[in-house]
Length: 395
Ligand SMILES: *Cc1c(COP(=O)(O)O)cnc(C)c1O
Image (cartoon, rainbow, N blue to C red; front, side, top):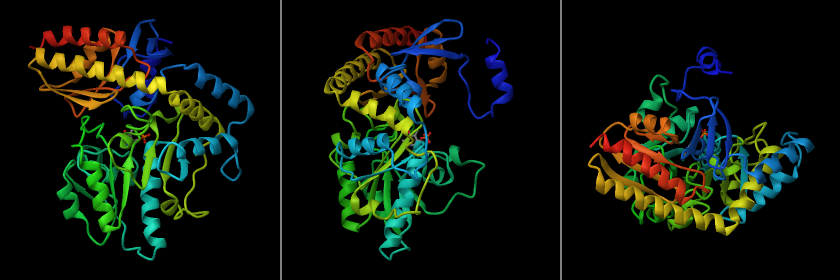
Protein backbone atom coordinates (compact mmCIF):
# COMPACT_ATOMS: atom_id res chain seq x y z
CA UNK A 1 0.00 0.00 0.00
CA UNK A 2 2.78 2.41 0.91
CA UNK A 3 4.25 1.72 -2.53
CA UNK A 4 1.34 3.40 -4.31
CA UNK A 5 3.10 6.73 -4.81
CA UNK A 6 6.27 5.10 -6.11
CA UNK A 7 4.36 2.78 -8.45
CA UNK A 8 2.12 5.60 -9.71
CA UNK A 9 5.18 7.63 -10.66
CA UNK A 10 6.26 4.71 -12.87
CA UNK A 11 2.99 3.62 -14.44
CA UNK A 12 0.72 6.67 -14.74
CA UNK A 13 1.21 9.18 -17.58
CA UNK A 14 3.23 12.00 -16.13
CA UNK A 15 0.69 14.80 -16.67
CA UNK A 16 0.04 15.76 -13.06
CA UNK A 17 2.28 17.43 -10.51
CA UNK A 18 1.03 15.33 -7.60
CA UNK A 19 0.80 16.36 -4.01
CA UNK A 20 2.94 13.96 -1.98
CA UNK A 21 0.05 12.16 -0.28
CA UNK A 22 -2.11 9.17 -1.21
CA UNK A 23 -5.73 9.63 -0.13
CA UNK A 24 -7.73 6.57 0.86
CA UNK A 25 -10.94 7.71 2.55
CA UNK A 26 -13.31 10.66 2.88
CA UNK A 27 -16.27 11.60 5.05
CA UNK A 28 -18.00 14.97 4.79
CA UNK A 29 -15.29 17.64 4.57
CA UNK A 30 -12.61 15.31 5.96
CA UNK A 31 -10.08 13.24 4.02
CA UNK A 32 -7.55 10.68 5.25
CA UNK A 33 -4.30 9.57 3.69
CA UNK A 34 -2.75 6.10 3.77
CA UNK A 35 -0.88 6.94 6.98
CA UNK A 36 -4.15 7.84 8.72
CA UNK A 37 -3.44 11.57 8.71
CA UNK A 38 -6.62 13.71 8.61
CA UNK A 39 -7.21 16.71 6.34
CA UNK A 40 -9.98 19.29 6.00
CA UNK A 41 -10.88 19.59 2.33
CA UNK A 42 -11.19 23.10 0.86
CA UNK A 43 -10.69 21.77 -2.68
CA UNK A 44 -13.47 19.15 -2.98
CA UNK A 45 -11.77 17.40 -5.89
CA UNK A 46 -11.59 20.79 -7.67
CA UNK A 47 -15.13 22.06 -6.99
CA UNK A 48 -16.65 18.62 -7.58
CA UNK A 49 -17.73 17.03 -4.29
CA UNK A 50 -20.21 19.76 -3.36
CA UNK A 51 -21.98 17.57 -0.78
CA UNK A 52 -18.68 16.39 0.67
CA UNK A 53 -17.29 12.87 0.60
CA UNK A 54 -19.39 9.74 1.06
CA UNK A 55 -22.64 11.71 1.29
CA UNK A 56 -25.35 9.19 2.29
CA UNK A 57 -27.84 10.36 -0.37
CA UNK A 58 -25.29 9.85 -3.15
CA UNK A 59 -23.92 6.62 -1.71
CA UNK A 60 -27.45 5.20 -1.52
CA UNK A 61 -28.41 6.33 -5.02
CA UNK A 62 -25.24 4.89 -6.53
CA UNK A 63 -25.40 1.55 -4.73
CA UNK A 64 -29.10 1.03 -5.47
CA UNK A 65 -28.70 1.99 -9.12
CA UNK A 66 -25.50 -0.06 -9.53
CA UNK A 67 -27.40 -3.10 -8.32
CA UNK A 68 -30.21 -2.41 -10.79
CA UNK A 69 -28.82 -1.04 -14.08
CA UNK A 70 -25.52 0.72 -14.81
CA UNK A 71 -25.48 1.24 -18.57
CA UNK A 72 -27.53 0.41 -21.66
CA UNK A 73 -26.47 3.12 -24.19
CA UNK A 74 -28.49 6.05 -25.42
CA UNK A 75 -30.28 3.82 -27.91
CA UNK A 76 -32.87 3.30 -25.16
CA UNK A 77 -34.94 5.42 -22.80
CA UNK A 78 -33.87 5.31 -19.17
CA UNK A 79 -35.63 6.82 -16.19
CA UNK A 80 -32.85 8.41 -14.08
CA UNK A 81 -31.52 10.37 -17.08
CA UNK A 82 -34.99 11.58 -18.00
CA UNK A 83 -35.89 12.64 -14.48
CA UNK A 84 -32.55 14.44 -14.04
CA UNK A 85 -33.05 16.41 -17.26
CA UNK A 86 -36.56 17.31 -16.11
CA UNK A 87 -35.20 18.50 -12.75
CA UNK A 88 -32.50 20.56 -14.44
CA UNK A 89 -34.73 22.31 -16.96
CA UNK A 90 -37.28 23.08 -14.23
CA UNK A 91 -34.57 24.96 -12.36
CA UNK A 92 -33.31 27.23 -15.15
CA UNK A 93 -33.88 28.84 -18.56
CA UNK A 94 -33.23 25.65 -20.54
CA UNK A 95 -35.69 23.33 -22.30
CA UNK A 96 -33.39 20.45 -23.28
CA UNK A 97 -30.27 18.71 -22.02
CA UNK A 98 -27.50 16.80 -23.80
CA UNK A 99 -25.60 14.55 -21.37
CA UNK A 100 -21.92 13.67 -21.70
CA UNK A 101 -19.04 12.80 -19.38
CA UNK A 102 -16.95 15.86 -18.55
CA UNK A 103 -16.71 19.61 -18.64
CA UNK A 104 -14.68 19.62 -21.84
CA UNK A 105 -17.24 17.40 -23.56
CA UNK A 106 -20.07 19.63 -22.38
CA UNK A 107 -18.31 22.61 -23.95
CA UNK A 108 -17.64 20.61 -27.13
CA UNK A 109 -21.37 19.91 -27.31
CA UNK A 110 -22.16 23.60 -26.76
CA UNK A 111 -19.78 24.72 -29.50
CA UNK A 112 -21.07 22.08 -31.91
CA UNK A 113 -24.65 23.09 -31.10
CA UNK A 114 -23.90 26.77 -31.82
CA UNK A 115 -22.33 25.96 -35.20
CA UNK A 116 -25.10 23.53 -36.13
CA UNK A 117 -27.76 26.06 -35.13
CA UNK A 118 -26.55 28.55 -37.74
CA UNK A 119 -25.83 25.84 -40.29
CA UNK A 120 -29.46 24.68 -39.98
CA UNK A 121 -30.56 28.27 -40.48
CA UNK A 122 -28.66 28.34 -43.76
CA UNK A 123 -25.78 30.41 -42.36
CA UNK A 124 -22.88 27.93 -42.21
CA UNK A 125 -20.43 30.84 -42.51
CA UNK A 126 -21.32 31.83 -38.96
CA UNK A 127 -18.98 29.48 -37.11
CA UNK A 128 -16.54 31.54 -35.03
CA UNK A 129 -16.75 31.77 -31.24
CA UNK A 130 -15.53 34.73 -29.21
CA UNK A 131 -13.96 33.53 -25.96
CA UNK A 132 -12.12 35.34 -23.18
CA UNK A 133 -8.46 35.70 -22.35
CA UNK A 134 -7.48 33.68 -19.25
CA UNK A 135 -10.59 31.52 -19.66
CA UNK A 136 -10.54 27.76 -19.15
CA UNK A 137 -12.87 25.48 -21.08
CA UNK A 138 -11.10 22.11 -21.19
CA UNK A 139 -8.29 20.12 -22.81
CA UNK A 140 -9.82 18.63 -25.97
CA UNK A 141 -8.83 20.22 -29.26
CA UNK A 142 -11.85 22.52 -29.54
CA UNK A 143 -12.01 23.47 -25.87
CA UNK A 144 -8.24 23.95 -25.72
CA UNK A 145 -8.54 26.34 -28.67
CA UNK A 146 -11.39 28.09 -26.85
CA UNK A 147 -9.30 28.38 -23.68
CA UNK A 148 -7.53 31.73 -23.33
CA UNK A 149 -4.25 30.53 -21.83
CA UNK A 150 -1.15 29.96 -23.97
CA UNK A 151 0.49 27.56 -21.50
CA UNK A 152 -2.32 25.04 -22.08
CA UNK A 153 -1.86 25.13 -25.88
CA UNK A 154 1.92 24.91 -26.01
CA UNK A 155 3.18 21.98 -28.07
CA UNK A 156 -0.26 21.10 -29.45
CA UNK A 157 -0.31 23.57 -32.33
CA UNK A 158 -1.79 24.16 -34.79
CA UNK A 159 -4.86 25.15 -32.82
CA UNK A 160 -8.28 24.41 -34.25
CA UNK A 161 -9.59 27.42 -36.15
CA UNK A 162 -12.70 29.30 -35.13
CA UNK A 163 -11.93 31.05 -31.85
CA UNK A 164 -11.19 34.72 -31.22
CA UNK A 165 -10.06 35.97 -27.84
CA UNK A 166 -10.75 39.27 -26.11
CA UNK A 167 -10.01 40.47 -22.57
CA UNK A 168 -12.49 39.30 -19.91
CA UNK A 169 -14.74 41.96 -18.39
CA UNK A 170 -14.52 44.25 -21.45
CA UNK A 171 -17.78 44.69 -23.38
CA UNK A 172 -16.30 47.04 -25.94
CA UNK A 173 -13.68 44.45 -26.90
CA UNK A 174 -16.41 41.87 -27.50
CA UNK A 175 -18.44 44.27 -29.62
CA UNK A 176 -15.39 45.07 -31.74
CA UNK A 177 -14.54 41.40 -32.20
CA UNK A 178 -17.98 40.36 -33.48
CA UNK A 179 -18.03 39.83 -37.26
CA UNK A 180 -20.48 38.28 -39.73
CA UNK A 181 -18.70 34.98 -39.05
CA UNK A 182 -19.34 35.03 -35.29
CA UNK A 183 -21.89 32.47 -34.05
CA UNK A 184 -21.48 32.80 -30.30
CA UNK A 185 -19.84 34.42 -27.30
CA UNK A 186 -18.53 31.95 -24.72
CA UNK A 187 -17.60 32.85 -21.15
CA UNK A 188 -17.47 31.58 -17.59
CA UNK A 189 -19.65 33.82 -15.38
CA UNK A 190 -16.66 33.93 -13.01
CA UNK A 191 -13.24 32.91 -14.32
CA UNK A 192 -12.27 30.21 -11.87
CA UNK A 193 -9.00 28.70 -13.16
CA UNK A 194 -8.16 32.20 -14.40
CA UNK A 195 -7.63 33.38 -10.82
CA UNK A 196 -11.21 33.70 -9.47
CA UNK A 197 -12.11 36.79 -11.51
CA UNK A 198 -15.59 38.20 -10.86
CA UNK A 199 -16.76 40.57 -13.62
CA UNK A 200 -18.40 43.95 -13.00
CA UNK A 201 -22.17 43.67 -12.39
CA UNK A 202 -23.19 44.85 -15.87
CA UNK A 203 -20.89 42.48 -17.74
CA UNK A 204 -23.11 39.43 -18.28
CA UNK A 205 -26.24 41.56 -18.97
CA UNK A 206 -24.09 43.58 -21.39
CA UNK A 207 -23.02 40.41 -23.21
CA UNK A 208 -26.67 39.34 -23.42
CA UNK A 209 -27.61 42.66 -24.93
CA UNK A 210 -24.75 42.53 -27.46
CA UNK A 211 -25.62 38.98 -28.51
CA UNK A 212 -29.28 39.88 -28.95
CA UNK A 213 -28.36 42.95 -30.98
CA UNK A 214 -26.11 40.94 -33.30
CA UNK A 215 -28.34 37.85 -33.42
CA UNK A 216 -25.70 35.49 -32.04
CA UNK A 217 -25.72 32.98 -29.18
CA UNK A 218 -24.50 33.42 -25.62
CA UNK A 219 -22.88 30.40 -23.95
CA UNK A 220 -22.10 30.27 -20.25
CA UNK A 221 -19.56 27.70 -19.09
CA UNK A 222 -20.88 26.94 -15.60
CA UNK A 223 -18.81 23.78 -15.27
CA UNK A 224 -17.21 25.18 -12.11
CA UNK A 225 -19.62 27.97 -11.05
CA UNK A 226 -22.78 25.86 -11.37
CA UNK A 227 -24.51 23.64 -8.79
CA UNK A 228 -24.66 26.11 -5.93
CA UNK A 229 -20.98 27.03 -5.88
CA UNK A 230 -21.63 30.79 -5.90
CA UNK A 231 -24.78 30.76 -3.76
CA UNK A 232 -27.43 30.27 -6.47
CA UNK A 233 -28.00 26.97 -8.27
CA UNK A 234 -26.36 28.58 -11.32
CA UNK A 235 -24.17 31.68 -11.06
CA UNK A 236 -25.85 33.51 -13.95
CA UNK A 237 -29.09 33.47 -11.95
CA UNK A 238 -27.42 35.89 -9.50
CA UNK A 239 -25.78 37.94 -12.21
CA UNK A 240 -28.73 39.25 -14.20
CA UNK A 241 -28.32 37.46 -17.54
CA UNK A 242 -29.56 34.25 -19.12
CA UNK A 243 -27.60 32.35 -21.79
CA UNK A 244 -28.84 30.35 -24.78
CA UNK A 245 -26.60 27.43 -23.83
CA UNK A 246 -25.13 26.53 -20.44
CA UNK A 247 -22.61 23.80 -19.66
CA UNK A 248 -22.31 21.89 -16.39
CA UNK A 249 -20.07 19.13 -15.08
CA UNK A 250 -17.96 19.34 -11.94
CA UNK A 251 -20.50 19.49 -9.10
CA UNK A 252 -23.37 17.84 -10.93
CA UNK A 253 -22.93 14.27 -9.65
CA UNK A 254 -20.66 14.87 -6.62
CA UNK A 255 -17.75 13.05 -8.25
CA UNK A 256 -19.26 10.63 -10.72
CA UNK A 257 -18.21 11.58 -14.27
CA UNK A 258 -20.92 13.64 -15.95
CA UNK A 259 -21.27 16.67 -18.17
CA UNK A 260 -24.31 18.45 -19.58
CA UNK A 261 -25.06 21.05 -22.22
CA UNK A 262 -28.41 22.73 -21.57
CA UNK A 263 -30.15 24.91 -24.15
CA UNK A 264 -33.37 26.59 -25.13
CA UNK A 265 -35.75 24.66 -27.36
CA UNK A 266 -34.85 26.81 -30.36
CA UNK A 267 -31.10 26.29 -30.08
CA UNK A 268 -31.29 22.65 -29.01
CA UNK A 269 -33.42 21.91 -32.07
CA UNK A 270 -30.17 22.02 -34.07
CA UNK A 271 -29.33 18.64 -32.54
CA UNK A 272 -31.30 16.11 -34.61
CA UNK A 273 -30.86 12.30 -34.47
CA UNK A 274 -27.29 11.40 -35.42
CA UNK A 275 -25.98 14.97 -35.09
CA UNK A 276 -24.08 14.32 -31.87
CA UNK A 277 -23.66 11.37 -29.52
CA UNK A 278 -21.62 9.72 -26.79
CA UNK A 279 -21.61 6.14 -25.54
CA UNK A 280 -21.51 6.78 -21.83
CA UNK A 281 -23.30 10.15 -21.61
CA UNK A 282 -25.96 10.19 -18.90
CA UNK A 283 -25.88 6.54 -17.86
CA UNK A 284 -28.47 5.44 -15.30
CA UNK A 285 -25.67 5.22 -12.71
CA UNK A 286 -24.29 8.76 -12.96
CA UNK A 287 -27.67 10.38 -13.49
CA UNK A 288 -29.08 8.61 -10.42
CA UNK A 289 -26.19 10.14 -8.47
CA UNK A 290 -26.85 13.58 -9.96
CA UNK A 291 -30.56 13.32 -9.09
CA UNK A 292 -29.59 12.69 -5.48
CA UNK A 293 -27.33 15.74 -5.63
CA UNK A 294 -30.07 17.95 -7.12
CA UNK A 295 -32.64 16.82 -4.56
CA UNK A 296 -30.24 17.41 -1.66
CA UNK A 297 -29.12 20.76 -3.02
CA UNK A 298 -32.61 22.06 -3.74
CA UNK A 299 -33.25 21.68 -0.04
CA UNK A 300 -33.06 25.46 0.50
CA UNK A 301 -31.24 25.17 3.82
CA UNK A 302 -28.08 23.92 2.17
CA UNK A 303 -27.78 26.78 -0.35
CA UNK A 304 -28.62 29.39 2.28
CA UNK A 305 -26.17 27.89 4.74
CA UNK A 306 -23.45 27.87 2.10
CA UNK A 307 -24.11 31.56 1.36
CA UNK A 308 -23.80 32.52 5.00
CA UNK A 309 -20.63 30.44 5.51
CA UNK A 310 -19.27 31.90 2.25
CA UNK A 311 -19.87 35.46 3.48
CA UNK A 312 -18.22 34.63 6.79
CA UNK A 313 -15.28 32.99 4.96
CA UNK A 314 -14.82 36.02 2.69
CA UNK A 315 -14.82 38.37 5.69
CA UNK A 316 -12.19 36.25 7.43
CA UNK A 317 -10.05 36.38 4.28
CA UNK A 318 -10.47 40.17 4.20
CA UNK A 319 -9.14 40.30 7.75
CA UNK A 320 -6.06 38.38 6.56
CA UNK A 321 -5.64 40.95 3.81
CA UNK A 322 -5.66 43.77 6.36
CA UNK A 323 -3.12 41.95 8.47
CA UNK A 324 -0.61 40.75 5.86
CA UNK A 325 1.07 42.81 3.16
CA UNK A 326 1.63 39.73 1.01
CA UNK A 327 -2.17 39.45 0.50
CA UNK A 328 -3.19 41.69 -2.39
CA UNK A 329 -6.84 40.91 -2.93
CA UNK A 330 -9.78 38.75 -1.85
CA UNK A 331 -11.88 37.54 -4.79
CA UNK A 332 -14.98 35.51 -5.43
CA UNK A 333 -18.58 34.78 -4.56
CA UNK A 334 -20.26 32.18 -2.36
CA UNK A 335 -17.85 29.30 -1.87
CA UNK A 336 -15.69 30.09 -4.89
CA UNK A 337 -13.07 32.27 -3.22
CA UNK A 338 -9.54 33.35 -4.02
CA UNK A 339 -6.74 35.01 -2.09
CA UNK A 340 -4.37 36.83 -4.46
CA UNK A 341 -0.83 37.00 -3.08
CA UNK A 342 2.14 39.04 -4.21
CA UNK A 343 4.26 35.86 -4.21
CA UNK A 344 3.98 32.23 -5.36
CA UNK A 345 1.13 30.37 -3.68
CA UNK A 346 2.53 26.85 -4.11
CA UNK A 347 4.70 26.83 -0.96
CA UNK A 348 1.77 28.20 1.09
CA UNK A 349 -0.55 25.44 -0.12
CA UNK A 350 2.12 22.81 0.56
CA UNK A 351 2.64 24.10 4.10
CA UNK A 352 -1.13 24.16 4.71
CA UNK A 353 -1.38 20.56 3.53
CA UNK A 354 1.29 19.54 6.03
CA UNK A 355 -0.86 21.26 8.64
CA UNK A 356 -3.99 19.36 7.55
CA UNK A 357 -5.72 21.76 5.13
CA UNK A 358 -6.17 21.04 1.44
CA UNK A 359 -6.67 23.73 -1.24
CA UNK A 360 -4.88 24.61 -4.47
CA UNK A 361 -3.39 27.52 -6.38
CA UNK A 362 -4.42 29.03 -9.72
CA UNK A 363 -2.41 31.37 -11.92
CA UNK A 364 0.61 30.78 -9.67
CA UNK A 365 -0.31 33.25 -6.94
CA UNK A 366 -4.03 32.87 -6.16
CA UNK A 367 -4.99 30.51 -3.32
CA UNK A 368 -8.29 29.07 -4.52
CA UNK A 369 -10.92 27.76 -2.08
CA UNK A 370 -13.79 25.63 -3.41
CA UNK A 371 -14.83 23.50 -0.41
CA UNK A 372 -17.86 21.23 -0.21
CA UNK A 373 -20.96 23.40 0.32
CA UNK A 374 -21.44 21.69 3.70
CA UNK A 375 -18.30 23.35 5.10
CA UNK A 376 -18.89 25.01 8.51
CA UNK A 377 -17.67 28.21 10.17
CA UNK A 378 -15.60 26.06 12.49
CA UNK A 379 -13.83 24.50 9.49
CA UNK A 380 -13.25 28.00 8.10
CA UNK A 381 -11.85 29.17 11.44
CA UNK A 382 -9.39 26.29 11.37
CA UNK A 383 -8.19 27.17 7.88
CA UNK A 384 -7.89 30.88 8.68
CA UNK A 385 -5.88 30.10 11.82
CA UNK A 386 -3.56 27.93 9.73
CA UNK A 387 -3.15 30.61 7.04
CA UNK A 388 -2.54 33.19 9.76
CA UNK A 389 0.37 31.12 11.07
CA UNK A 390 1.84 30.44 7.62
CA UNK A 391 1.53 34.01 6.34
CA UNK A 392 3.12 35.38 9.52
CA UNK A 393 6.39 33.87 8.27
CA UNK A 394 6.07 35.72 4.96
CA UNK A 395 5.51 39.20 6.28
C1 LIG B 1 -12.87 22.09 -15.05
C2 LIG B 1 -13.45 22.98 -16.08
C3 LIG B 1 -13.63 22.55 -17.40
C4 LIG B 1 -13.15 21.21 -17.90
O1 LIG B 1 -13.80 20.15 -17.28
P1 LIG B 1 -13.21 18.65 -17.44
O2 LIG B 1 -14.24 17.81 -16.77
O3 LIG B 1 -11.88 18.64 -16.75
O4 LIG B 1 -13.10 18.38 -18.89
C5 LIG B 1 -14.24 23.42 -18.28
N1 LIG B 1 -14.64 24.64 -17.89
C6 LIG B 1 -14.47 25.09 -16.64
C7 LIG B 1 -14.96 26.45 -16.27
C8 LIG B 1 -13.85 24.28 -15.68
O5 LIG B 1 -13.66 24.73 -14.45
